[in-house]
Image (cartoon, rainbow, N blue to C red):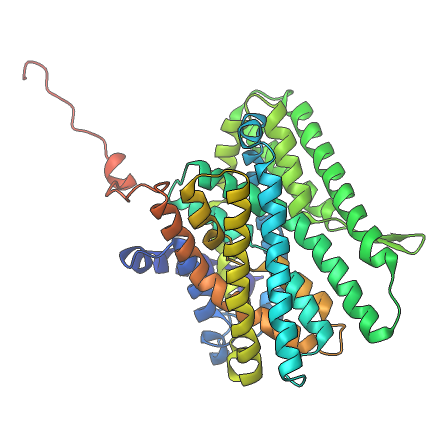
Length: 431
């Protein structure tokens, strides 16, 4: 227990300290947290083997997985706040069209590139792995995007569309991956399962939305019993924790695997709650303040999970570079064309694709499933390499795109320490 608390405290304090030089360099705080995780991880300070100073091995990092899951739950719950009815009315069907189109376009472009690489040199990557990687490419990480938006208080049409598209991306990516992985498995085994390709992903999405909607409604009903701000905040936190726990359940019914998407479930809970509770705005702000340290730990742990060992594998680097280049092309092309087709502003067309580049947890989860393929190790290592690049570069690119679109104001010099310093009382009789 002492070692666990020491590791967490060093991770939290180290991330905060690293954010100071990052700010001087104009880098988002999330990048500083990720770099802190790399330094504390098994490939840097962890190699010293000093108990409590860094993470000695990947297994030790995995022990803190519950913190990452809880943090993702709160992140998804906060993104649900973007789906307020007034915003959906203003966006119309644009969000759905852009969300689906950019994901499908990315998958097609990466598929074509990696399949072409397979035919040029079959020893580099197998056809099933190429198809699977194409589907994984559609996934976008919501955590880094939301952190950048919060840190710089970004606001505007691009920011609202971005957060909605990132949320939809999870559902679209799940369907694309299930279908592609089913096809890849069929190519290796010679038999295709309709249940795993079509039935299970649809059931997972529907059940996730149902569970999340029920959680959001029950939270609203119970919130009315309390009038204290602190009690309503505590109740909301408890419900998010409950939703995260329920979304992690898995079981089988009649040979069909039943599971939930943590991101979709918590996002739906936040969406329902924010649309039916008239005090939701205040509660969401108070939850954000409470979860700030949790978010820092999430990114430091994410940095510690990044595997630098993949940098020593030339074949992985080659396939990884192709994957990164064509995934970036797919995100930009898909976003630009779908935004143009739906009549989005020129700034949104130019910058949305770049803000969708970050990739992390969802993609890693898909890569873990893909390890069952004969060439599954290649898929996992390529995704690890891409996550390493995207997580370190993506937040900065997101910041620059939002600034170029005019939705991030230049950072001021305001200090909470200065603002909260009591003013000297004015003596009576003096002007």
